[in-house]
Amino acid sequence: MNSLWELYVSFFKIGAVTFGGGYAMLPIIQKEIIEKKGWVSNEDVVDYYAVGQCLPGVIAVNTALFIGNKIKGKQGGIAAALGVATPSILIITVIAAFIQNFLEYPMVQYAFYGIRVVVCALITQALLKLWKTAIKDIFGITVYLAVLVLALFVKVPTVLLVILALAAGLVAHSLQGKKEGANQ
Amino acid sequence: MIYLLLFLEFFKIGLFAIGGGLAALPFLYELAPKYDWFTEADITNMIAISESTPGPIAVNTATYVGYHTAGFWGGIIATLGNIMPAIIIVLMVAKYLEKFKNNSLVQAGFYGIRPAVAALITVALFAVVKVSILHGDVFAATGNWRSLVDWRATALFAVSLALILKGKKHPVLYIAAGALAGILIAPR
Image 1: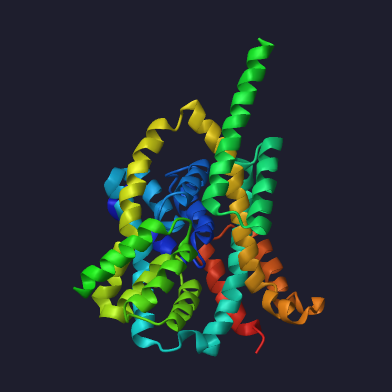
Image 2: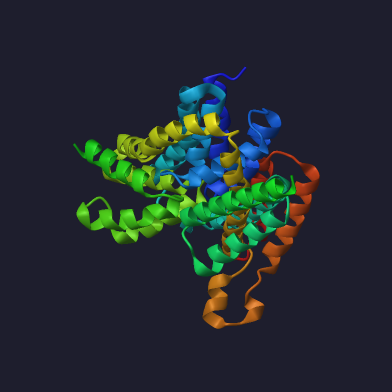
């Protein structure tokens, strides 16, 4: 049963444990939404990340909107988006209201020292899982390396990178079409 | 009135900040002198708190600014204003995406985009590694290679990656274990 409530709760859980932005959400989406619920595929999520990246709004909320919409239409999208945002609202409100200098408590700093490292390991694992879906041939490796270099060293804006990759995909597709046409 | 202003200002940020939470920063710096809601120094604190608590940074920042400006409802209204443009636009795009997903040109576009997303996630990974396993800032200041790697964090990374690849438990468990490990081994 895919009720709106179930969507809200799933995305509430995802929002509650996503440390450090939308990409850190990936391991938890893989566990909750792909493996446990089977609502969408790995491939769907990659596509949503890509398109969400080029639209207004943050990746986490945009991905929630896409997945919720796929499962239960517009209402599903809104339920998922509110679910992913609710933990932020609760936690930040409590911190803003009651805790002065939250980050200066040594215990908090020590805990985050460990959490950050585990987040690295979780993203590494998510990336390994995603690799098979995303990169299937020489073309894929070429695009991967090109985007990596452009993002790290040239600091090309992300939206532009996604658009360039899209263009590369279209060019590769039309070249392949020509080749097949010539072979026939 | 303050609620309406908060809603509109954060709606604007949500509409124009494309590509993740930090894209909202220039807009926040613009807001600081415009209203007396917060100072530019406050923004740094907000980022630090937003980055180290769960949830998307943009949403966290909206809640934090809204709360400081107009209390509990201020936080909620700023957050709703912030995600409203995405709700409208993404749901519109989603309709067409599902419809044209099997079109061969759309498929060709995604064939190019998917490896790019893998690369962007790699970049995000590097960014987290830089602040959690490496001492990028210390190295930049001293130029001493031996100060670059945090060996305790590297060991914790190796152990947790091995456990994650083998164990396949829920990520929350690993995050909780990471907090505990941090309390035990973080350098004092």
